[in-house]
Length: 109
Image (cartoon, rainbow, N blue to C red; front, top):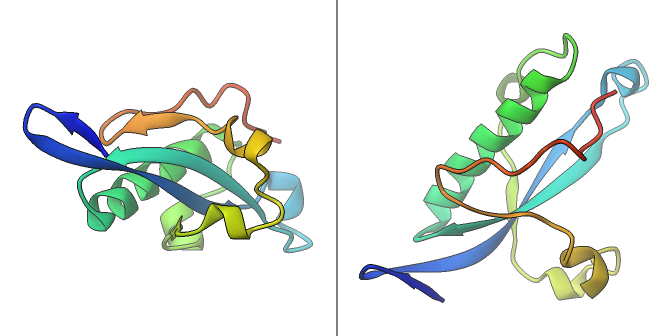
């Protein structure tokens, strides 16, 4: 837990699906991950959806993430997912509720 002036925040791994513009025709999806420091699951899900929506807005003419996917998930036990190796987990951005991660390295096309 992380203390911030009397507030206890947890570090949650938020996962959200997305489709690059080129993937829309074939229906393929990918997932993006970001750690969010928050006081509750509700805060993580709400802020994670805002992050996903902003990411979608950076892509060319893909619509609304909320309309297409609706919600992301909190990964409860990332160590149980074989694709989320410790070295991969270490690459995910960490943000507070209200902050956006640097999306400049995330795929857009």
